[in-house]
Length: 283
Image (cartoon, rainbow, N blue to C red; front, top):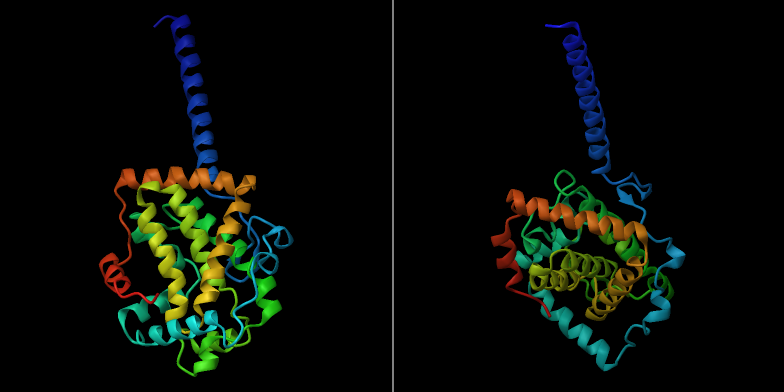
């Protein structure tokens, strides 16, 4: 081989090696970007939301007072509560107990059957992150009214069991019943997921309604608590859409769901058992 040719080969080899190193570096950067940025916890296991609490919708400003005793609305609450107590120790009660758990990773699978895709930190990290952060926003939006009205929970009134761990029941008895924080969170998640997966919106919204009803089945909330919680969930999602970080995670989550569907990754939950439990609703 001529000397000039040798130099040219060495030159191109050097260029190719440099290109490979650059591509490897870019791939590493893409891998890092594929994970959402770390966010501080507001308490162990619970991430801070997208919006500072003082900028969230105010439940005290948006909601009327809870039903007063001896009114038609209070009678409705009592009648629905008595009907729901009949579901104790049924599959619907078991599902309600599972819905009570807001800790991750378990809570991430709540809507996986409705979305018809796996939702996990491994496969959908931005969606997983989105659910964790919006949980704080929706839940905190209820506390102005919770702390202001200090409504007594049904389990205290009727003395019947609640489908929550004993430590949780003790804490709930000291926490205002109106509006329902779980219902706000569940409805916020349902609205977000329905936007991400419009083809499954009916199933997702139906599961969001059932998530709120689980609080009545659990004997930890009145129906009017749940109804008011859904309103706060919707108000929170409307506020979240004005946040750039939320919108960025929403777009990333949409891409993740498309990738999961392309891979054919199915829900890891027992969707048949969930459907059977949901067939018996308390409304």
